[in-house]
Length: 332
Image 1 (cartoon, helix red, strand yellow):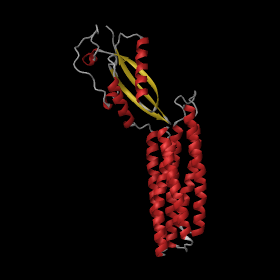
Image 2 (cartoon, rainbow, N blue to C red; image 1 turned 30 degrees about the horizontal axis):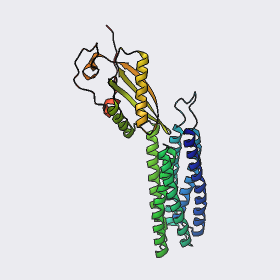
Image 3 (cartoon, rainbow, N blue to C red; image 1 turned 120 degrees about the vertical axis):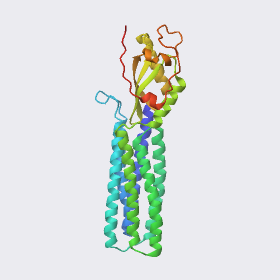
Image 4 (cartoon, rainbow, N blue to C red; image 1 turned 135 degrees about the vertical axis):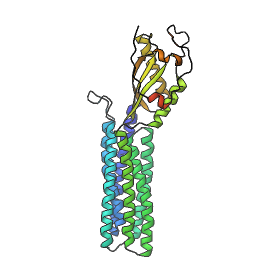
């Protein structure tokens, strides 16, 4: 299954690159036919599509390599780096577009064959939307940050193209030359905002920002499936590496339990999360011995070492599971 998923990602990104190259040349032809700086904005955006398409293709092929001695958590982080580069290039393209638009505002040129240009840009925009939808759908299904980021970029390109086409139609009707520059400035700003959003999201992933949505799902799974020997779970951490997650947590078990039984409880915990969560997850589980402070929350009725009566069970909310607890267990 893993190899099949890997092949799907590579095939999808390869298709995106090929179509992006074709659309880029189409928009370039439209620019040379019309001499419109508005259409130039779309052509420059397609340049970014092509560059980031190749970068994403490379990053996906690297991210799918198995973990090794130097990369014990795998190579998945490169997808976030790739998406960050994409966001930066989009920002850069937006700035160049605005620069060219402002320059053209003071040095207007004659616009030609705008009707043909509008048709080419409109078809390219529709293709980008379909391609973006396809990329996002596959990316979400297979947890590929690169494919999702690429899909968002392509679809945002479509939204800006719709506005661009409307503006170009107005330009065609009114013949007001400065409208071309105003359109380019407007959509250059939209492109900059798109780049900013992609950079913000990918930087959060590179900084290992907590994914509260997944953490809440895991908290619900643990609360719904807790066993009586699982006295407490804490220090829960979740880190994303490409298309997989890594969970690290501390599992508190009865102090008199032997190592083999404790290991078995850890395996049950891992299996419980894996079977109820669609994401690919690997685990590091540290087992702690219980102490008398937890007796009031322990549901083991036949415990011969209980020092305090049971009062209530711990509710494993996100806050409870992720809190950091340190204690020392001392024997008498």
